[in-house]
Length: 184
Image (cartoon, one colour):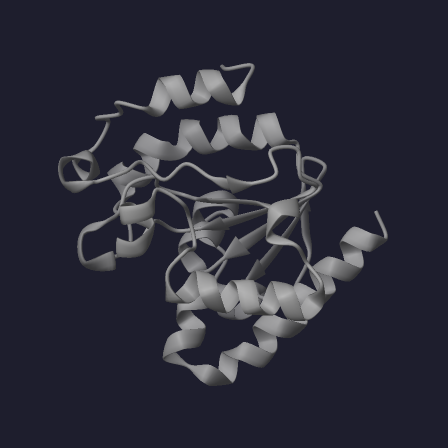
């Protein structure tokens, strides 16, 4: 257990808990406000994130930033991270052992942030955090409360790049999250 982000950064800086460490350029821990009321969790860094050391800076991140801007959400006012902190090869989904290797880091992040809302971006984040009984198609857009945290699953921004029809759902989901946040 850590008490500060500095301790967490020290703990993770040379992580070799799984094979993802073998090809990484950067460990991608987080971006944003470290005492935010809202936390976004994706699945793992892509090539741009691995190169820059920040989550959601590639095409999917730019799309998410556009939605934030359109809704009046400031990226610097939210906290953004991923399930795994190193890039899976070829942007594949993280494997079970890779997820398990990073889960303690994610738990530490949640305990340090103490968010009121966690937005789960995509199926990997949803299943990792809330369990395999959930699927993004059935849980998307629905509030789920557990341990005094409100969870809100939605599509991963990368899914919007593959299927533009999902953009309206993502937009409406972020609007719902913003409204909820304004009422907390």
